[in-house]
Length: 158
Image: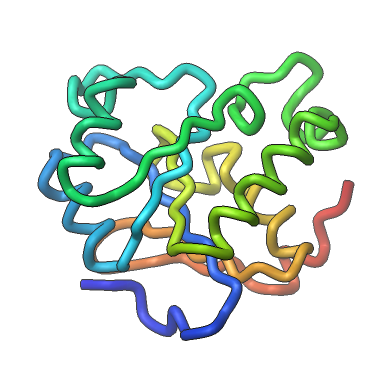
């Protein structure tokens, strides 16, 4: 089942967490939402699941016709001083510009390890992108997606 109301012609970016998903479930979620490229924002692209580890993850995606871009160096979590402070850096802003460029050309999903975006730095990336005019939808599982309320997005500031 795909996320509803994705819209056409909309500046849209999806997010998804690897969580404990099987290889098949993860690929199925990407395909059902027409994702053509993954932007990996895990600072350390590893997992306890072999199919989500670095080169194996990239290979799995490419075998399924999905592009892979690693951006954990610019957009990954675990930053000295906290992630919100890091968002003021040039590296972060360059990373966001690269995501925007990719998302302008294809359906992109930002990926991290945490299944729920409200427990992950993806929520900060998403809020930043929303302030730039992007619609961000978080894929939770095959039955639901999460779109934060605009009032929540507008109330957070840096």
